[in-house]
Length: 221
Image (cartoon, rainbow, N blue to C red; front, side, top):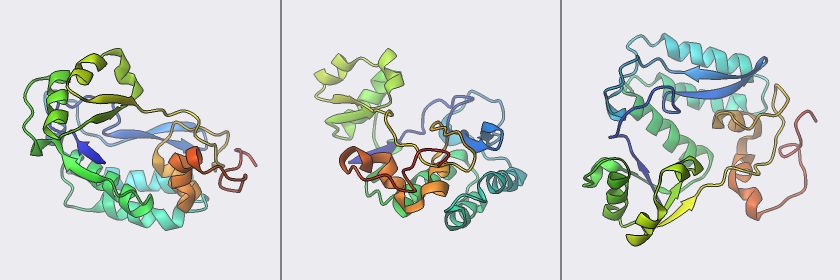
């Protein structure tokens, strides 16, 4: 029902906020935005490089890797427009534009997007997260499975919030320009290869089984 951007917390290096994986002719590789080595800053304080050459390098790399993908020509111009937008001088505004744009324009997601800074949430770490959820009126919290090692479900339950662990397993394979299939890559890989079928590959297959098609075929076919 509500997706909250949580950008007023500590920025972590070598994380998904400034890099992701793509599929190249030589296997999967990282595509990273250079943001410096400073660690004592919040996510919403991380600037993008004043030198915009990284944008052109990323676009050239994506073209080299995906030009032969079926839906590259449809999606690439939109992606280039967002990356080249001079209004994005901070990493978090670029990430938000990409997240909301992909959700709204390419996946048909209508979930409401919000900002953690719009709520008063004191404390640190798990305490602050819990206070944020309470302030937002949440009754359920969807979390990535990695948080199982440190998140106290009982504490959330006591506050009337059920923790739901996101399941990333079972996604159908699709043909990639550079086989064999690798699911651990950016969503741009899925969009370039499957286009309008992308929503089915993300969630539709769980409730709408369908016969094998070109979009849902096994890699290498």
